[in-house]
Length: 120
Length: 110
Image 1 (cartoon, rainbow over the protein chains, first blue to last red):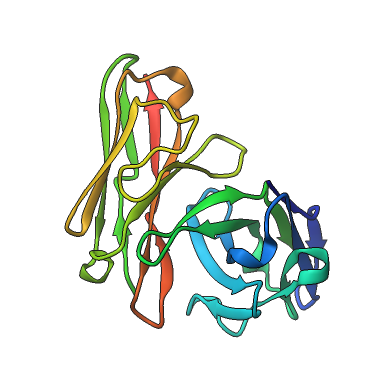
Image 2 (cartoon, rainbow over the protein chains, first blue to last red; image 1 turned 180 degrees about the horizontal axis):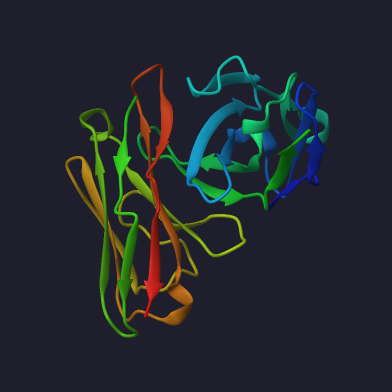
């Protein structure tokens, strides 16, 4: 079981970018994929999640409208995309699998992270 | 928005027992807490789930507990390799539901 993330991205403000998280070794549609941000020297922040089964998404209020989470079941890959980056988007982004039942959820599998650097 | 509060730092000497607290707002109380360890330069990894359960491979030196809206992580027999950042997390039902992470506690082994 593995979550393999795409490589680092270096972009300019205003540019777009999509990073990916490819799942393998388990039933992709059975577990939500979440995205978590970690700004340099800071803690973990939940960005949002997607249900690969029906592509239903939920976003943190802090990220709603600024990022888009999507999924391609045919390639068992989840995506996180920005249409217009800001310098403040510079961070490491992790994907994580959520397991468990209602009120007993937790993240049991994490990707290694994708570093996004936004600089002019 | 819901909040989980952790002390920013903790420390102990090898062999000691250290406790890291995680205090939540009222609307986290009915959901379980999980704990994650992040070694320097690596991704977070699951340490404790459902308040007090250890995944296979996590030594029993690590234990978790929860009472009401507060949780804690205890590490006994402290070892140098325990030096890392530790985060608590829980689902909150407010604002249509969202995950909340504590601010993280940097554990230093003196």
